[in-house]
Image (tube, rainbow, N blue to C red; front, side, top):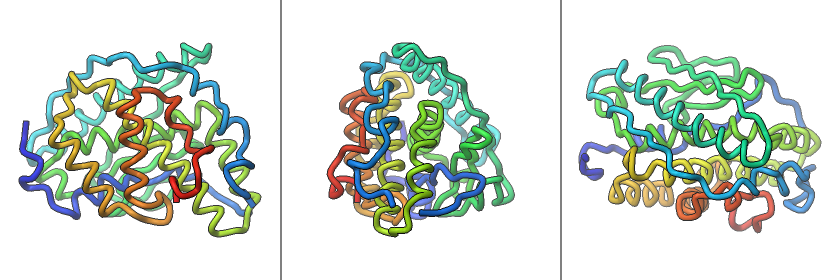
Length: 265
């Protein structure tokens, strides 16, 4: 396993750790007052009662330096591992699950939901149930498997939110508010929940992916110090929810909608 402190540049981590959002094909506007006003689909979702995630035997071949094709295969394999995990969790509460479509691009920056940038090279489109990932030249030159896996798991977390009704409730509430602060808090709750779901995935695949502890600690520390933005909230909160998902291995620990504002701001 590679040493995480070698050949990992801030720009690469920024483009992967801050992984984008669940953007609609079109969004309108207007008050989510606070966490207490969030719909039941967010605060008391059945998915929170699905129990601890069982281990998933996910062992994709690590991508090769300079090979975009090998990175695509790696991401597609990680997506299949997410399929297994979330199909189980949905089944545990009597729901059926359907997998998202995956689009990995090596050129172009546009998707039906907007622009993929070097800072945010991946996002999820709820309308088409599609995860879009743009591979950066720096990633292709020197891929970091753990961060690639976390990126896919985060975007997959948005698909889980879509399938469980969380995103629908989010946009309904978001479109009723004109308060910028309230909107930013809602966005942070959505993003940090997806990050927590990514932590659940990493824990479920810890022994198989595998998750190297030094690399994991490095990624968490980097996010805490550098990943702050308006959509995702403070880096330290993003790192906190990632670790909460990892430590608990349970979607029930990822209820960001009832957390204090300070924990998601």
